[in-house]
Length: 319
Image 1: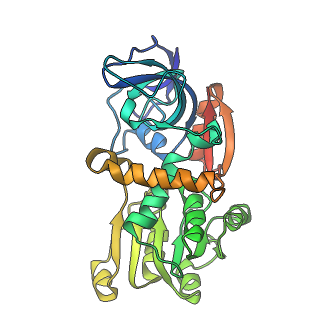
Image 2: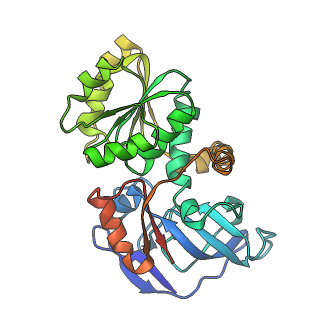
């Protein structure tokens, strides 16, 4: 089988030919159909992601596949079942073995490509806004990086949860995409003073930040008293300092969200969240945005789309 692997940190991944793996006890083997790309894949290539495996490893954190073999003493999901899984690695390969307990059987109504890019983007935003920020109807939510893979889902979920949503995105095309997802107000942080613009709209009760850098600093100062800053990542490449005195004076809370980390110490947070999200999707309340669907042979091109920020929403690789 073929797999896109990192064999040396900081170097371009390579397509390697490997033997088809055999599932161990408690595992299923999946014939992989599609894999969603994430910014974390780029960090893994560099070796800067918090959960980077030992080299060599296969890229791809989330995927959809069909169960084609069960390990010893493994009762299911049954062979032939189409499932989604957050695996942390291994998605950009033709086959892979994964923990059976983490597989989520998919309803027939959920398309494979949408499911492959669904878990991390929607899961991160739902856990961030619901479980961590406790976003309330009528509150104001500021989403940074609002046209990116996770940012766009935060816009959509924020509106679904009854908030007024301010979307910050670079360029008219990205702002239009955020508007289509339900944003009430649009700000281009490259041409507009983000802090002043948010304050003019009444300030932010919750800030969803996958960007970091200067945008974090501006959004932090635009928070209302008792505001909540939710740190998702640092796509800008800069981890911002936090003014603790400003936090104290305005009673601002800064919270980090490492979505995959919950799988290790409180997995029910993720399973309950995903259950809710699947129900909303089946009810037609969520509309995943996939900007690119590419074959496995163009996986490196897909990663470059993330690196150069030319994608909006999700990039999905089919196998």
